[in-house]
Length: 486
Image (tube, rainbow, N blue to C red):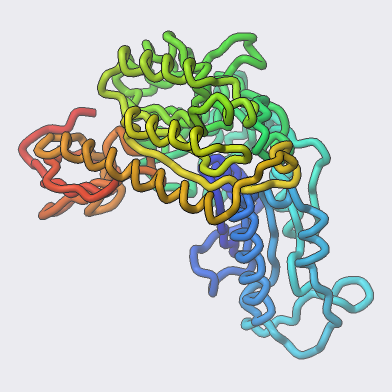
């Protein structure tokens, strides 16, 4: 049977989808990117804020409508929405209809009857995050797996038999591998590598701990085994992801181990770029910065969500950081690696955010010079402490502050673009006409459009000179006589 995988949300969610794809390939399922060819629609949902929930629910409804027209035989819902709203999914999206003898599926097959002569015309099965190793069973039997307490899937024994459509598990690290098989869903030259799951930070606005549980690191040797396999199957760039990458190792080694992991990853021959995402500012220490500076393969890039700069709001958010410590961290980063690109996120309109708080955030945005900035409006989530806070900001004011932050950052980007004019940069091609520098993460940051270039291909490193720029999109000339630095 053919499966189409629809993945919503962040890169961390995508790594879960790749694990599910690996299990399905091992069970004999095949895959398609065309809905018209699929027997089964598997949607991996996101649910950390209201817009993500709405997007997931909208997509489920769309798939149900297609199923009623006979496009799919089954719909399986997985991911964060299942963990967060499992009862609601089963109640709202699992419609029951009496069996008719008239074939409705495009291939002329009547849908299978349930006990009592009924059929599901909605969602057939739900699989929680910690039940993803049961995905094949859920599809075949229409069962639901939603453990009460999220956990990492167990370590599975290594087998040398390759899954159908997947890659052989690496027979390393003591003959065991974390999370079983995995099938790549990203570009062949770029991959995400999840090094931990869950979170212990307990920010007052965040639903992640209730969805994914406490922080759990993968053992270092298991991360290295997966990285080697990614490199063997074509990955030249890996982006390390977790809810908090800088906490890596604290739970199992009793001390931070991200710097040690980065040094080990740098020894994998075929990897060229290693990128750190989701760093927590209070844990960006000298050892980590020294490693980023000294290891050539580690991108001069750091994704470090700050969320705000005002102590008043940081305290309400239950963040460890304060204005003084954030500024000292930024100073330490710039001093150690002057040319590093720092990416961050801010939340606009958090409950109790005064005009003074917001002006301070705007000023910090102007002065900090972030190479890339993600901006979100605050959304009130029922399961979080911030939902009960007084002084909730009206939607109109949140939108105004959101737009003001975007405008402020656009002026920062204009200055950065001016400094890039005429510079020669190494670009990793994502397709035949565009790519990224080491300072641009896949999917979320800027792009380089290469002009008048022929015979370029994805995964190729090229040299290019920046000619023009608008926002995060830069245009560059291919320099065929210069060898790129990788």
